[in-house]
Image 1 (cartoon, rainbow, N blue to C red):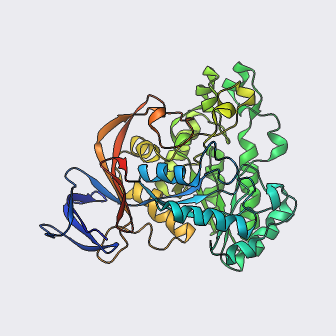
Image 2 (image 1 turned 180 degrees about the horizontal axis):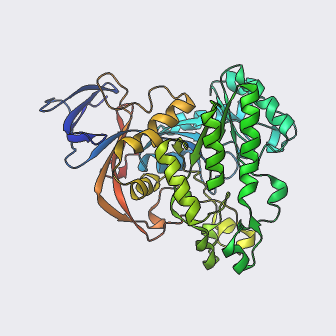
Image 3 (image 1 turned 60 degrees about the vertical axis):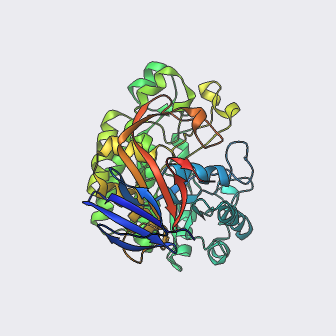
Amino acid sequence: MTAYLITSVSVVGAAPTDLLIRDGVIAEVGAGLTAPDATVVDGTGLVALPGLVDLHTHLREPGREDAETVESGSRAAALGGYTAVCAMANTSPVADTAGVVEQVWRLGREAGLVDVQPIGAVTVGLAGERLAELGAMADSAARVRIFSDDGHCVADPKLMRRALEYVKAFDGIIAQHAEEPRLTEGAQMHEGEVSTRLGLIGWPAVAEEAIIARDVLLAEHVGSRLHVCHVSTAGSVEVLRQAKARGVRVTAEVTPHHLLLTDERAETYDPVYKVNPPLRTAADIAALRAALADGVIDVIATDHAPHAVEDKECEWAYARPGMLGLETALSIALDVLGPEWDLIAERMSRTPARIAGLTGHGVDPAPGVPANLTLIDPAAHRTIEPAELASRSRNTPYARMTLPGRIVATFLRGEPTVLDGKAVK
């Protein structure tokens, strides 16, 4: 295993120092380090962060390898500064058995670019009718601890309660896609002034807020762990704030696009801006940013959702919802939060790693710590060209936008997956 000496790098925004990586761990930290056998990486002007961890990634394999594979999604993640991603269950077949989650887990290990941790389905086939093999998935080689029907809400309260009760036995988590389906039937975008003007059926904020309110009460009653996916409204923030004040075991995530883009993007009828939950208002964005800063929202998660051309480049009403996110998330965080490195590390690495139980990830570089880290040049800017992305899909809402920050290197257990901004393999 090659040793690496990263010189004059700022660790999470601190004064420049040197990092020596040897045998997969941070061997030494300090100024003026020497190691004749090490490959030198010049860290001048760069910031070292613990490797990013994404709680919400769609890798599409098995079943939709035309849109993404575990390997291509892993490469996109590494180029975005990630060392671990949690892969959602809405594959084909659905990841609702030990066999399928183990397949995804093994594909991640074979790719070797990031640690791929499968998320198991809550219900069989995501149909919301009966629980999937939660225990078998938890006991499998993949050691599943998070379960989600993401893309579909577990709408039946009795079934949701049973799921929360089941995973409590092994301290598992139910991650809910909060959407009351009877309130969003036929919805095309956020319900508000813009939808009225465009004549599109609206997706009301209360459809999200009502499910979150119900589920925090269920989690409180059961004493189990609940995670809320892609929070998008100011009302949801207030429900979460009250629940956390009562000590409910609830965590929540927000996506980069919900921190930056408003429902006004739909005025172009460009389906790249169609996403579930939909883009909301400027007031919602302000509430989400404030909640992220004060900890009511725990995590930035990408909801990386690649789609094949025929599923996205069509009329708005027929387009599949979803956006790419892995390769641009850190730039969006830097744009939204500024160079608040400790906050970025907390929301994009430490906390998601802790929620997912990913040992060795989300730990700041220090002697003896696994060398899972990313180096970013905060002074650089890049223009997003869809054709240059590693993902097999091109549905990025940031096409031709100039964003701050450039990932220079990513290390997974001491081995580079990205060097000089390019994937190593």
